[in-house]
Length: 121
Image 1 (spheres, helix red, strand yellow):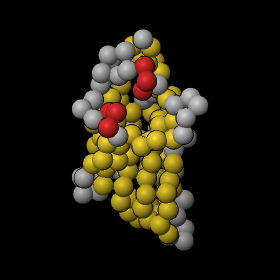
Image 2 (cartoon, rainbow, N blue to C red; image 1 turned 180 degrees about the vertical axis):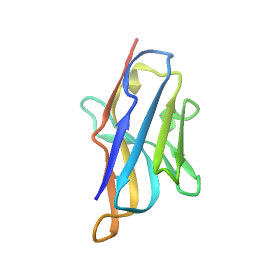
Image 3 (cartoon, rainbow, N blue to C red; image 1 turned 90 degrees about the vertical axis):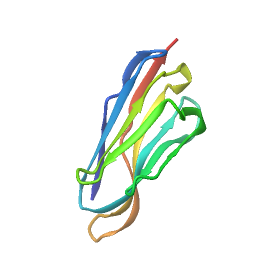
């Protein structure tokens, strides 16, 4: 199957920066879209940013201009550079991928276990 493993979360003061990384492994044929979602305490899981294999990106309005998503198609990795962090960015961040993988191969959504990001005021 396909596994996503995140790293890079932690505690940072408001105005600081963090970088999240995610590596996909397993029976991968093609990950058309990779990216990040987050779930703040007491809220639903929301889109942060995604990037297609061709490079097209999509960002939540709340992070535009502060966060940058990038990927390495050959390595099946996706990064999230987060700058000027705010307390409202505090959440569990989940790596996400959509594509073809698994045995037998099929189209599916894949999720990481999540990594905590806490921004103190």
